[in-house]
Image 1 (tube, rainbow, N blue to C red):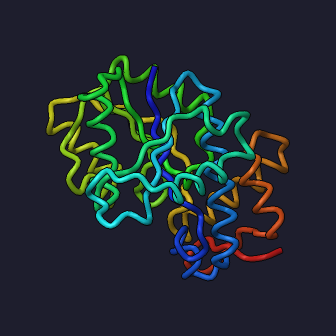
Image 2 (cartoon, rainbow, N blue to C red):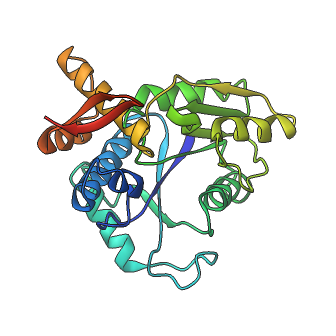
Length: 252
């Protein structure tokens, strides 16, 4: 069984999906709704899989992000965010994120799980990857039987999912292009690396436009879409449109 850490923060307007807000794709309030919806879809996918969900929340009220200090207000906000999607929002384990950067927080979480808790494998995923579904988590678990590092490539050189049976050097491990950096760290440690299918992530305007386009196309084809994310995109009226530079997100 893989312990899958969902890295989240309270979805306050102005604090999440800031690149999408800066690009004009969504407002700060819409970004908060979208972030919450994506987090719900990822949490449901992990819970439905053979993995064990760990909600790794950012204690936004903590004085020192490098120290493991609990933040009840942040914890309550994250529980409330996930509650509409989970039969029992208290069922997952909740732990604070520790670290001053994404790479540090991922490294602390994965290393703690593998070394301190002695889990067989540990993975990390973020709400920006709502197309991560049950079969993706289970496929990664199968690949981890042969390779110590399994990555889900994503748009813009990013990763949608990262799983490990052995820790690597996580310092700046998510430096772009993250899929190459993480692969290099695995190979430098003498580990085998394998890959999942490529999925869109909503971390950049381009990645978000790809995600919206796939939501629309799959919905039109009556195929599976992450339901909470799709509902918010539909409610806002977001569509992918062609520009001179590629795809952008507009309104229908």
